[in-house]
Image (tube, rainbow, N blue to C red; front, side, top):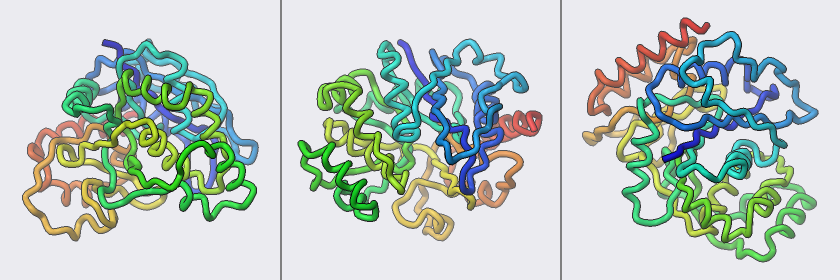
Length: 316
């Protein structure tokens, strides 16, 4: 069985995002977990001309990745569809893998042998599915609605591309979108869209709201008959809100208010993937204190956290 961990990246500096060391930190942590992943595919998109490029972003000489270095393959690509477009481009480069996993450069693996855990969970689903960390069960999306804030030219360009599809339908989007998909489901997507070129063309729209690409990610699955499932009833999930804080991401509603929710004896396994902001130099003692009651085995979580946090402190 061949497995592919795709890491969407971007070395451009923009807005609140400080890209320095994000990918290196993620790889240091990945190097420290146990995994039999076949390949780690790092996507290297061209940086937009309006953004400053970190020219050292993909230089890993200063970090210890001895356990995974031979598994890493860097693929250069255009910056189309941000990380969601990169994911499909990575798959296009090698269709031999049985399963593809998707994360970004500020996300890392937390669970040992995460690939087998996620494959086992995916295979419990009887239908073709994309298994992500979390999606809002009470929220649906519509492509006509989401492009309304865009200018007339962008709306027309986008709608002309998709005129053969019924865009009035409502669908689910993988909100904490990192997850896994099988080769069989990829073939089903390619059959629906008649190949990767169509998918790439759909993503190749210059939206002012780049988050629209994530909605398109969900729509491509929906249009292909790929169900969205998550592990929110099985594992603690964490989400970093850019420039703000890390929150639990398991329940519908305002994620910032998760600490105020009534505790109903929920019990979860440790996370599969986590944001790198869980670790040093970020101080997360309050987060961990409030998470404690949700773990089936808190000691298992804290042992792994301390182990990985030590890796990061050594790196810094």
